[in-house]
Image 1: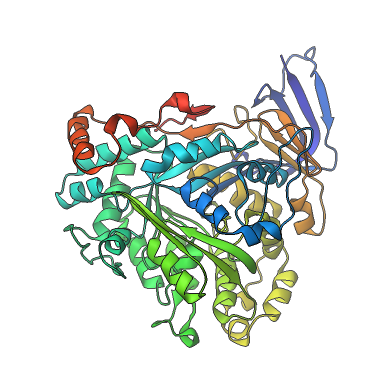
Image 2: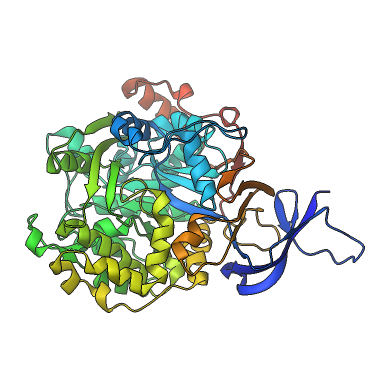
Length: 551
């Protein structure tokens, strides 16, 4: 028995009502266990944690770290690689590159070095799932999973148009099983298909008809949300709403929330969907966080992650092809676009967020307004939509911005006058506590994802634990954990990777009606470049995996 004890830590475990109390944590193998009741039982190891803060391992519920679009971002940013510090090989690690799109090994090392032990790639086309899982297997130190793109899938659109909810539900379940995915993802519902059918195509309102299909974005949102509910998936439908980044898009975002009609739904990178204004007029661009946050505050069925913009150079990558094209033209830079057969597409473009830009300054402020305006931190998760709003390496700075109002005001004071004077941020005095930081970086995303073994430190939880040295400089505190434990093993000590353990891939298999298969086979034979039998990813293709139950 490998029973050991972390002794006398200040424990932050909001899911179990612990907020800084001094106590012990007991670990047996890869799980947290209750303290032994038999006084004769002694731990094989005791780790003295006096004065240290203990939190569950961090959970990043929305990032882009694997798959073809991420590889495209790596290839098109050699300048990004040259200007960043490489990850050098050590006795415990392999070499890697950083920049805004790190290599697979570097991604795992750097997440772990910040105290994160779980991350989900938020946009994988089922056709490319095998590629993503191969990269997951090369990403050490973290458990991982992926959301599978469904909002522009031809087979799904046809089933919705024909008013066949049973077939919609069966297809959602089959796609998740075939791609070893974790949740259904909707990106610009219908808009990608419009983009693929005609130059400059898109949809902008929830009731616009999608070319070639008698179906609307509203119908897609409702149908997939209902299927997720009926399948009892651990995570709700994950929604990237229409009109991302467009002035005045807050009305579309509100309409999307309302379209859920009480069903669970997660709206992702909500900062990019909260803009006032119109006609791409910079003078009218601004924030409408207040109205949207008020809606979230009265609708517990809705959760959000922020997609915080951080100043500096990064890479935009999205399954929203029209957005990639728009950014490439807006910034007059190289860009990449790809269609994924009958399922999806993607767009990749370099971007630099500048303090002197009114729009970029608004984006920075709008993200922080979201954190500070949502009353219940259990409804909001930290994200930068890595790498779209900035690298996940910026999370410690976001922590400081939330916990230190003076620092926040100092940054705001250096931004354009329009933002300084008009943003609600100047009047928001709220400062996050360590407990609230623990919620939005660990407990809340784990709960949103339905991960019962993560985001807490109670008996039965995965032994994923981060120990921090308290520091009045919260950025410094969260940049350099004292120890990071993954599955009961010390993987990082003072920023140095000691044992790059292999994580596991988390997936769901909700079950589906096998009567769907003959129609699917016919569909693949007629329209796809891949045979039906070769499409699903087998469990034997995953180095390590864990099925999360639907309930």
